[in-house]
Length: 174
Image (cartoon, rainbow, N blue to C red):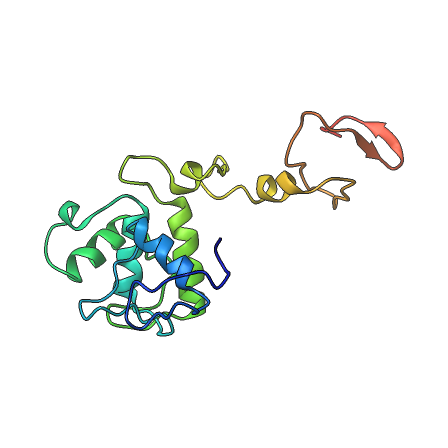
């Protein structure tokens, strides 16, 4: 199982007991990561924009054969064309900040896969009519009531719920 000490090393700089060895194995098996030409993975290094863009494109189903040009220009070009750069301040060659990573992750979730489906939808999540992640559905999926809503707030669902307003039974529209 992931997270225990039963992992093995695919790279000369990832020892069997490294906390991420099993996660790295899974990422390599899924072809999200391939490591570096010198046989290293560099698990404790920071990541540059072009490296992250490459991984995002792989998650979306793109391979190097789908890109025009050479690394890293081809990856950066496709990354921008898919809108993965919205809100990201790092440019080519720059190390990513946590803020950049947050935007990359959000942009990934709302991007189109190579097959034309929104990535979040391919993972089983839903979107709002505006094409954004449906946070209310994410929260409601794992929570059980009762909920307290502020004036003007909307319920994230309208079926299979019992609604009370000011202690009295009410409809979801109320």
